[in-house]
Image 1 (spheres, one colour):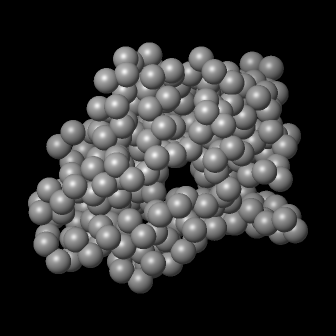
Image 2 (cartoon, one colour):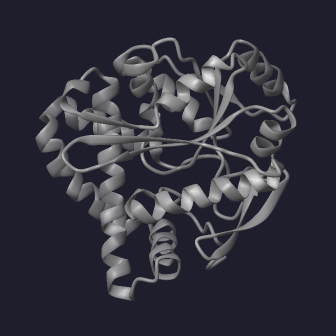
Length: 292
């Protein structure tokens, strides 16, 4: 994958910064300081700067000046969701409002008693999923499928700060041991969560149109769901104004029910979300190979 090697560079470091700021200065000074942190990345992160610029310029059709301004807004929005992640996970959930849109689909999924697959992406703040489910479905067990090894380090660090998380991690391994863990989770009526907008170099991919240009997507999550007849939801947790998060869940209703049809439906749903929340797209690399 051009520009992405399976590690979200700098994420753990920035989360440590946010934890330090909140502990030292409190919530509102943290948001004030975030403006300067976002400006730092605006100036000194050339690869992500260029990728976000092309994202707004070519995918959304903004002019050059508007695209540059929205680069800063994206960094600032990303910082806010990281601060929220620290605060909500740390027990300050009462500061926030949570809006549920389609949460009943989670209950319907579990009533089938054969697990389910949730397809999301690197948008919004899906790290808060467990806190949403806790309000409506306390017995929901979430397994986050990751290829980003730093995510495991982040989880360990966050647990050292806020306490143990209820979300399980299944790391994709070359020896395919993750397949057994996924099958076991499904047998236990647990949910598998895939951020299916990224892939590792070693995996098989399909090319597909997304936001008017071609990119590549992993075959694995879509084949797993269709071949095993597992129900699928498209899910996203997006940040609104005034400390509010909006949980979206939409069922996949198949017609031909092929892996490629599922991919197409996933991208159609994702495109709607990205257009509605353009500043919450967090793939900070050359996603469409605009400059590599």
